[in-house]
Amino acid sequence: MSNAPSIALRPEGTVYRWLTFGIPEILVTDNGKDLTAKSTTETAVKLGMSMQFTPVRTPWFKGVVERANGTTNTRLFHLLPGTTLGRALSHVGYDASKHAELTEQDLSVLLSQYFVTIHNPAVQSRRRRSANDLFLQGIQRHPPRMPASDSDLSALFSLSSNRVVQQSGIQYLYLQYQSAELVKLFQTSKSRPTVTISIEVTDIRVIRVQHPVTGRWFVVQSTRDLGAHPYPLARWHAHLGLMKEMGLEPGTDHDHARVEQALMRKVESLRKTTSSKARAAELRAIRKLELYGEAQPNNTNAMPTSAADAIVVSPTADVEDTLDAVFSAAQ
Image (cartoon, rainbow, N blue to C red):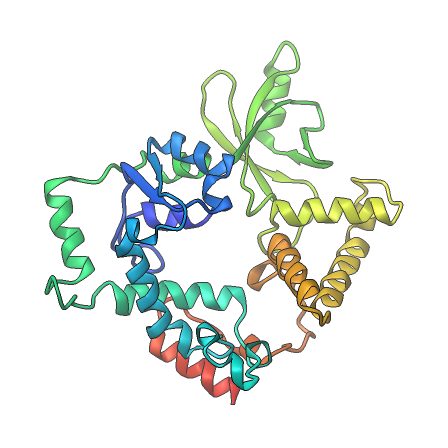
């Protein structure tokens, strides 16, 4: 629930020009573990949404969604290299993994482009209107509820914790955070002030700190160089775990590059596994570390590991142009 809601709640004018926006009053879902998880239900409470879970093995309770999923499979996923085609070719020895050319980041961009440029504007045969038209008609009768600001929305999807401000700043998971405003807060307080911090799980290079008197939020940078790209919290947990395995002291800056290299080697070894059980564990581990796309360390000498790695996917390009680029690179 860290990235997807922010795209859906913001109005048109964002990167993907997503028309549908607003905070739903009721969210109808199945019983997937990601949807029944405590973090999801807590986020729904923060947003003021009511969650309704459908009975197990009853997809017809949300037929509109299931139909949209089937259409997306036919119009998009089954056209991509590496598709399983719903296992339709399993009897002829077709191995989808040998044809896969897309990274998770590429697929995320393609999916957003598909809904914006193809699915939502398409006229539905039964209703004779597009999803965009139906949404615009609906918000005239029931204006959607919107978050107060982007900063308030980001705070809802962040972790929060209380920390004591020291002379050296704020420490969180062996990371030190310091800024001129924190120094001023420490110097003007009679005792060490306790503040509330907000941590973005997708990028821990900065935290947001709430002033204990004014209630205003301000951004504080980590004193450790975590690179130019977003550094996810899950990756930092993996980093700390690897430091423990290597017998290194957590929080030491001079070992950071060494551990990052070891972490990348560990991911590469996971990618080379062959058994189905190991491959499933590989996907879970790599997804948890979020090492795709911009989360990867910047290495100008690295060669692309697949044809699709050499493709630059533009968020503003049409999905058809991006698909042409994918297939051209895969040939």
